[in-house]
Image (cartoon, rainbow, N blue to C red; front, top):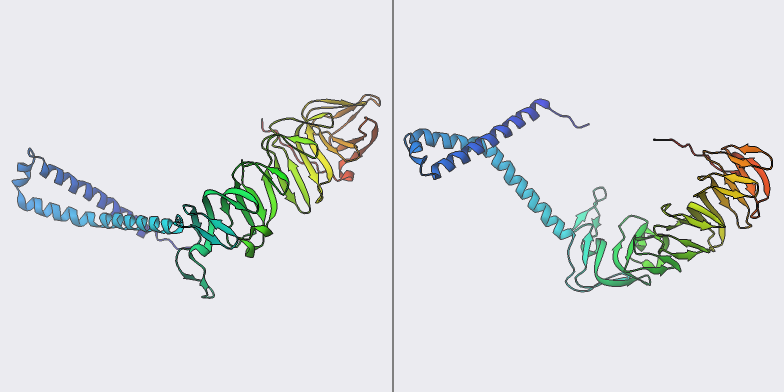
Length: 338
C-alpha cells in the first residue's frame, strides 16, 4: 500500500487554492489598470500597487507552474499518441498482409525500448503493428476486409468484413468483427488462423434453419454452436421457439437443437406452456423440460413439475419422464426481479 501523508495533501491543496485566488486577483488588477476610469485610482498609490502586484505574482507562481507542466504533459501525450497512431504514406507489406498507403495503424511501441526484466531489445515501430484501418478493402485470408486487429501476445485476431461474405463456407455478416484463433507467432499469418466466431447473415439458412439478424456462430471445442439473438421467434420442427442453439459436429452434422417454446404447445397428450425448454435430437426425439409452469399429460391426468423432462417422439408418443439430473440437464436458478 502506498503511504499517504494527509497533512502534506492538505498543505498542497491550500497552496494551490491560494495560488488560484492570487492569480484571479492579479488578473483583476491588470483589468483595472487597462480600464481608463479606474487607472487613476491605482496611480494614486504606486508603491502599494507595485508591492501588491509582486506579492500576487509570487503567490500565483505555483499555480502557473503547475498549469504549464500540465500543458507540457498534455502536449507530450498528444505527440506520443500521434507516434503510436500514424498514417502510412506509402504501401507496406508485413509478413503476409498488404497495407495500402493512407491506412491508419496503431502500434504497440513507437520507440526503441528494452525488456524491464531481461534488458533485451524489444521490437518497435511498424513491427509492432496491432491494429489497422485500411484505406481501401484489402484481401486477407481470402476475405475483403476493412480493419485488422491482431494484438501481440494474444491468441486471437479480428477482421471487419467489407460486406457480408462466406467465411470457410459459413454465411458471416459484416455487422460484427469476425474472430479467429491463432498462435502467438502467427500474428500476421492469416492463412493459419482458425475461425472462432462471427455474426450470421440475416435470413441465412444453416442446417435447414433460417437464422434471423443477430444470430452468431461460435466454435466450441471440436463443435460448432449457432445461437439466435432471442429477439425474434424461430420455427423448428413445427414448434415456435423464442431462442435456439444448434450444436453441430466438426463435420457440421447436427448434434442437437436446444431452445424454449415461444408459445404454448400441444404435442400428443402433452400440453406445454410458453417458456418450456426443449432438446431436439437427430432421430426426432424431443425432451421437454418445464421451467416455471408444469406440463400436463391429459391421458394420464397428471402434472410434470419443473425438475423433470418428458421424452417424446416426433409423432407425440410419450417415451418416458425422467429426472433432469439423470438426463444431464442443468436446472439453473431463476429469480423474478419484478
